[in-house]
Length: 264
Image 1: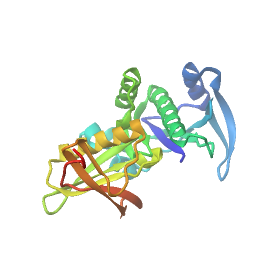
Image 2: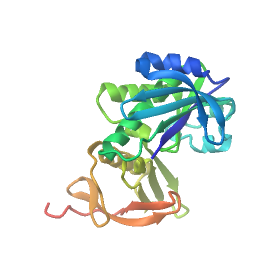
Image 3: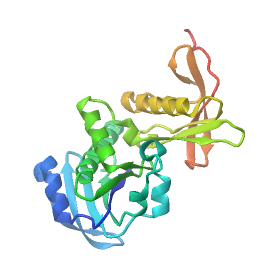
């Protein structure tokens, strides 16, 4: 799966040469300005980053992203309704990590690609005029400074920046219950998670799914239908497989009831 997204700018996007110069401070000779022939688009001036099996294209676009879609992806945890910068942004820089195809260790490759994407996004988000980072995998838009701080903090603490690679959304249901789901776990070979019509507080659902997503990305653990997940042996929730219209894919639904883990 290709890891992609964009950094949004209040004004004009940086040129390919400016992007390459900024990225060279991180990647050295692995970053350069090139003109690429893109199918359906013709010649495109871009910064290209090459490191190991990972190759990325970073190119400015003199137009804004779809404003409505970008606003929908502004998570309330990050923005708290203050989204004027998104509605008014004027350009963006597309960041695409090109998947090399068959690799001997797909999960390790996915982690490396996500890491390189985040490094590039953090560099570009530090350029003048950057206002936000959009992750296509997480379907979420983050404030530029918050994304850079969050990724840097994760690197320094040697933690997986799961909150930046996936997102958790909680919805109020008409019957007074709450539903929640993740986006982005499929990038790492796992199925996304959903909880429906729970009477637990929204904050509990958010934290539970965020912690579970972090655990799956960090450990590579595989959860299948018929198993259970939970924070302790005595608080395990049953898992079943079903199709999700939101994801347009098979997901794992976590039951709201809990039961002790077998053998505990």
